[in-house]
Image (cartoon, rainbow, N blue to C red):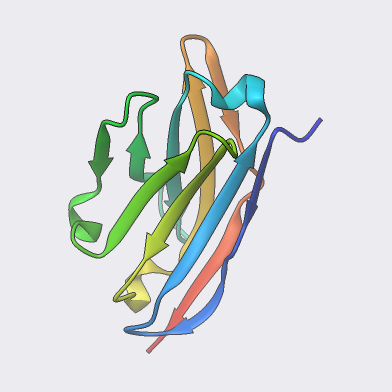
Length: 115
């Protein structure tokens, strides 16, 4: 049963923009902190940004000022707007929902930034 569905990845030149989206089931989305993680080849998965159900936001230092996370509670969707992309942002981006014992991952979407 697919509970998180990501979309919007792709190939973009350095300096460009992409927006990735993650649609969740209502039961998963409500009350959950929604996050975007990424994993580049040979590297550990890292938190890029997350947003709590109350709207508190955290960003990875290297994306501050370039990426913006937001959530649409009416659509049960979380977004990550990525601007001024750099080649080092290339990774598979994963959506995550967590709440108490709940920890759900999406299938991932590839973001590739060419130099």
